[in-house]
Amino acid sequence: MSKFYVMGNYTPKALQGFIKNPSQDRAAAASELSKTIGVTLASFDIVRGQYDFIAAVDAPNFESTAALKMVVVASGNIENLTILEAVDMKNIATLASTSMAGYTPPS
Image (cartoon, helix red, strand yellow):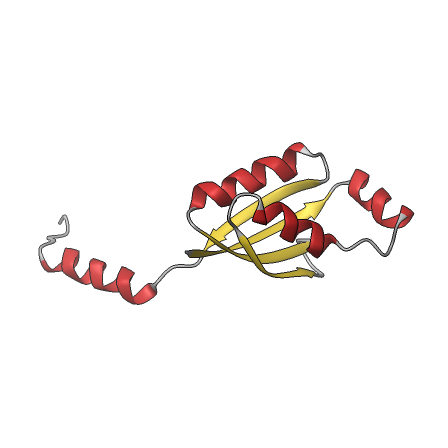
């Protein structure tokens, strides 16, 4: 499993839904949708700032997370959805170190 962070903004359509029903649980809805393709919602928060929400999910691969993006953006309730993948910096640095050992920069 890989960890992804998903951030996005609600559309005016979604905000109208919140106003109509302020007690709706978006985390529960996101969790149920995620389960349909084997993704686990680890956390979901409404936030201040550039994005309206951020979620942490555990997914088998990027494609599963991208499929969720496709579904929620197609619903018309979410826009500006960004997916970030957590990475192993030690592994990246190790690969870079190995590559750098045989690299001659252009002069």
